[in-house]
Image 1 (cartoon, rainbow, N blue to C red):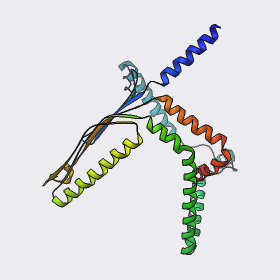
Image 2: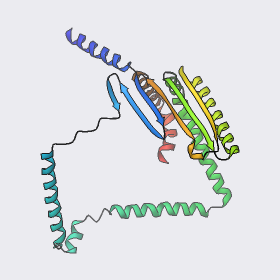
Image 3: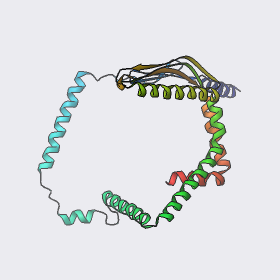
Image 4: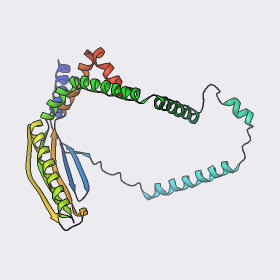
Length: 262
């Protein structure tokens, strides 16, 4: 009975921990990306830098490095006493060195590419179309396996505190206005897509400016957001995809093999 209580308590703690969200704060200002990932009180990224070793140990390591360098220089200065016949006998003749293997593989690839180039243009176009259709069918089959689970996973991602601060700058007024229009179209379409994909997407501020008579280098692309996701949601999605693949192995393995082999 106590063993069951301990097992149940461990399972409960694991379930509780997996339902605590992992928070990521992403900031991009002045061309510098700053990402901080936290889980409860732990900082997962960036990892703290390792402390330097005491100065005494450094001296010892420096001395050992010097002695190893001296020994290596002495070994290089000594002539090789072994005869070439001994080296050839010790080497395994059945196995070729890696450089020769790489050369053979490169020659095989070049021969294949040359054979493909020798084919007439209609046959090359047909081969390309067949390859694209094969990849498209394989992608659609894998999307049938993963698409629903990935959509549900995206619905469980919470994005808060979204701040967008952009500026289109150019010395030419026409170019600045065109860039300004592209930024507006891209940003607001992306916001609409994210709101349809995620249940919670909270937007704090959007600012897009148009600056004339300044070089294009003065354009601004700043922003930040906070992303939260429960590890349990990610684990559930991965397990559902893996078990779905294993239960229908004959159906999905050829599609996966198309992308793994090429």
